[in-house]
Image 1 (tube, rainbow, N blue to C red):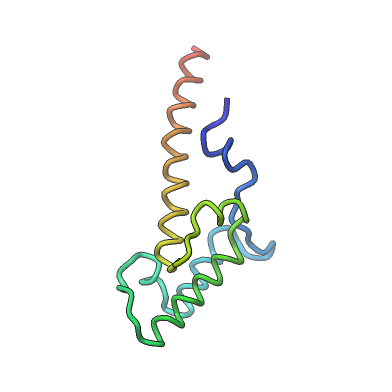
Image 2 (image 1 turned 90 degrees about the vertical axis):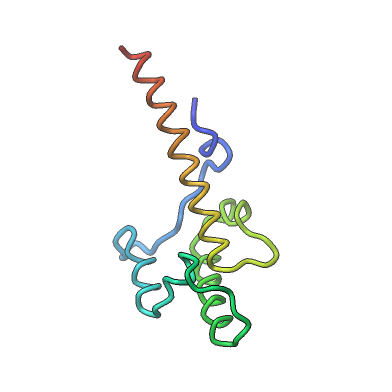
Length: 111
């Protein structure tokens, strides 16, 4: 019995290049361009061209890094970097809770 997430998204992974250490691609990208505030929501949406250009760069990066079925689950017609990242984070956080419950039940059965 798998978690709800693994049944709904059996091959959902964030793609990284083989030469990039796990978890580093995101930090390198956002750090290099000082764009972390778009992901954590501290950069409120603004209509100016700099904000739109920066947010579009992150959205493009996420579109090219996320597995297609995960992208479909979190994408809307008016994606921002923050909305996409929040959607991904929520899916994986939900999975963590479900997985903990499943492992706890499996452990109790084992005993």
